[in-house]
Length: 512
Image (cartoon, rainbow, N blue to C red):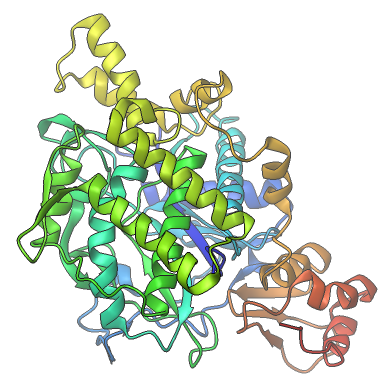
């Protein structure tokens, strides 16, 4: 087993209009999506989302929430009128989804199979949002977009991870072993935030942008009563074989290393859970309160109280998960990891070593440390207290997607951070899907037959074939089918959607 599995990441971007704080964010978000789609020649009405298999109210604990009980933000299965700009929703040629989620433009990456590819296609989303903002800037004052998770005034918006898991794994085991990991994972991959509390009212600096917004340990909701473990059971795959673990507790990362370790370490922990390897009880006492206490202490001295009464720091608990991962690979898989797993382990160890010796020494790898170093520079130079609004302005400007305005982007171009992926790979990922998942089929269909694709989703592509009496729906429930190796040849020889659909009938099953 390795870090490799089908995974992906979704990011809602902060949005504002310079000089107009009362601008309608839903309308603005629709403009962002439509600006990019129009600029790339994508007709929204011909590349919309297929909602047929959405099940947002199905709970992994074995029941369905009634629609009358659900908050409107949970009803993500309701189709959109594509003529309404606040409901803009398109599928891109790289296999991703770009749409309006509540009051934010969201980029949902295509399915990939490695943490490194998550970093690549997540950064492609930044380029896409940057292009949308540039197109809208033609008509002043334009729109500003931020890859962050809170506006500093009480609103939070998500960066969600998705991991395909075996359906055989008891959900109770996932909760038991993943909750403590998520409580402390933030010290490796938190984005940092000026202000304490959901509205940042208390002066200070904290490790994670999202931690103050979580209220319960387990639950179905994502925008209220936010849970550490989200129980939405919507696999977007063969339901008898897979479940999709929907993780809502992460921050939006700019640092390549932090993003890689966030996905990679989580995938390894999930592998141990699936294999029943973790025998010891790592449960944390009062996990929500502990999550927030850890976030509020950039010195990393806060003690985490375990359920058995023992105490350790967040870094010490993360070392335990790291040691378990090493033991797991040694015992179950011969101790020789593949290249992707070796990369994750190397950077995971590097981050923990830096954080343990001196948190500030992790500034090239970890977002919250990098941001803190910059803010402390301003504080020292100008004698600023944490409540100073200038620090909050820098916090927001840190995540501006524009290369010339975003503080992180400017520092990255000067070589301040470890880079794992090059710009050519990111540019490729803006328009091209990953080759080793069903995203290849989805994206290639959009690129080759844009006029004939009516809609698509994670698990289907729908064609309007000239002369056919009905729409033609091609299911893509297996994420491991529809790869370049599987369907590349039939795509290459198909002149139109009709010949593609006919040719798919003769495509052999992919080899394991």
